[in-house]
Length: 374
Image (cartoon, rainbow, N blue to C red):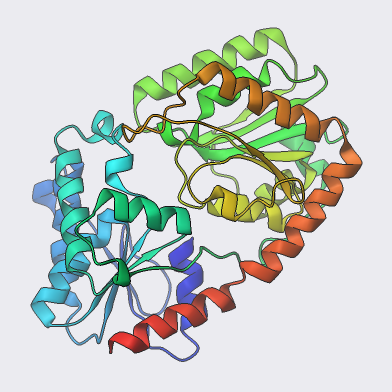
């Protein structure tokens, strides 16, 4: 989403070519790459490198290359060396702070970590999507020159993401628009904190619905854990709705608009575009006070921040999980129990999204970085 919106905003005065993973896309100057046939059954990290090698070759002729996430970092780093051009990295997450990825990648996690570290070290500029992320980058990679690590927040398309009042659509998804609701949107991965939310949901008032727009599990184990938690919750209360398919933007906007509150229980979140999407749709956001989330939520104005003390082993695990669950439940209960205040918070969140996170601001700052390097 970040790349899609940033490219759209930059193309007014910059010739931008996108080289992306996956099948061909019907868009001018967007080129897609599949994993080489010889690597289709390889470890995912090696398959990723197979795509990166193709992209690095095809970058010839560019004045600058900009990569996002470790998946593309190797392509950017190799292209920079091969073609003698600056490489800009935008960090949306950090491998040292996602050790649970070893469950998914096995030894490939060591490969992805090496790719990220090498690319960051060779980059002309490293862009963090929040000040919290910048601190994490410098802590994780102390060899980096602080001067080359800068902050450009994620943004939100305020024309596409806006309130959609559609009660019938919401009902068709199994949600009762006349009952208060807490909405979660995210992948089923350790960093998103979904198991903590399921425990907190058991403490909510009985009339409150829990809407889980959750899919793409990292591993069968985390999926099974969430399935077990949802099943147990459904035995205790009504209104637990799990939507495991990818909703269209219109559908998701309607769900967010109908929410009494949105929740982001992440234990690791550099910023969280989904929080901006919820705010743009007029939903207050209850989120963990970790990473870049405090830079998005104005506590008490656009939502509530939930305090968390975390282990410093990179996992983000709460030192006192029971306390975190209780605090999360208390913050959610506070917001859903006062619908009028929740509406005011949601309206304030929309205004904050408009004033602080529009793509015009993000694109202007990105252009300035490009100009300083070319």
